[in-house]
Length: 147
Image (cartoon, rainbow, N blue to C red; front, top):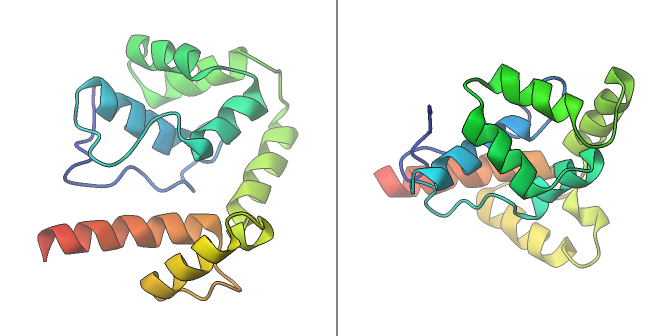
């Protein structure tokens, strides 16, 4: 299993798409890292990951088992396509595009948190997306680690 050491580098960007799904590459990285005890502060089956699980109608346990058995990202993408709720390429694109544009400012429960995080990271909360924040946070964490 090719697992990233998430104590030394972040998981892939949530923008990286496998079979059209945003966040799937990041989910795979976090799961593989947990399996080899190198996840650091990252968690598989977090609220972000659950957006994919809900969209596809699969469980974290099912995907974890698929990741354990799979040799490649491609085969995991094929597994995701074949299980849970059947989704067309168009549906996947609409979901992925919407998630990539999503801002936590739209979530009243997360609004203040997001604004503070954006300030901390030097992002404009009015234009930053959730993915912008995740990428900036990943970068900041590893700059601090290796400064």
